[in-house]
Length: 63
Image (tube, rainbow, N blue to C red; front, side):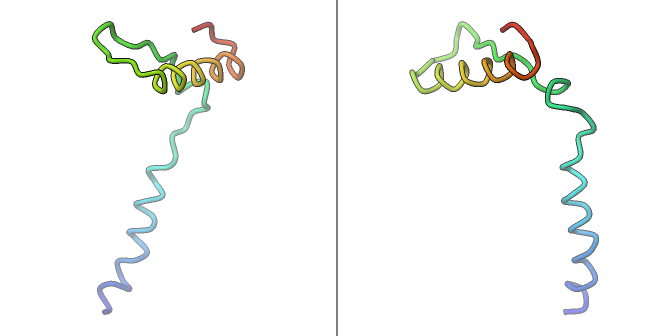
């Protein structure tokens, strides 16, 4: 039981360290461009369009 209590702190710090990226959304996000070989469902097309429109609205990027 002492081992579990002892490891709790480092495990929490380790898991939180993955959340820090050091960049803003505009620095990290890219326009989604599907491949010719991708099988596009209507839902996938809708999701790609939504994300690309969000990127254009927030960062001024033209998809």
